[in-house]
Length: 223
Image (cartoon, rainbow, N blue to C red):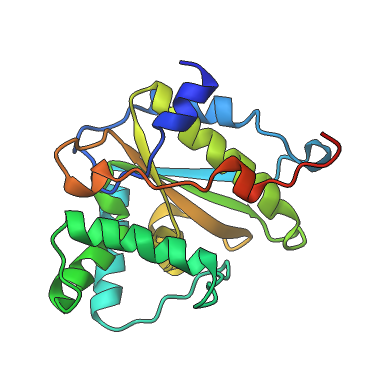
């Protein structure tokens, strides 16, 4: 598969088949992603790949924490979007698509809560990749490099017929991950990627998010 094909085919998957993803396949994906560029070849990323009973325990504890009102405590601050900005507008447009496909009315709080919980259980994926970096590194230095390797994982997964969803909910309760996945205190958790075989019948998996035209986001100089 050509890079262009993978980039166009990639989309966020929000429900997966229960079929497991083999360690060999995940190793191949990470080996490709590991070629991502980084500042002065520092390669600050470290991966914790979770599946099986360990992942199920993380999912269960995340949901218990949510339902018991335990506030999330992410180690990486998540930025908000100004209400009148184009960034917030794009977010709202995506939300409308998802909720329409999933038949979630605006005033149906039960369905909205259930939808939110999906992210905290990794959208029912059979595996998840948690991307971390060592706390000895200054912030935000490694984040650009982690973004590059994150994208490489998602593109490499497409070639194997896998889907992914980059999601911050998966690392909202770092103490849960430390407990079940043995992630040491010296590592800072930045993002999670749910990964598995997409469920083609799930309505939200049909979303293909829009993109701004190239000339809207590009300033040409000297052409």
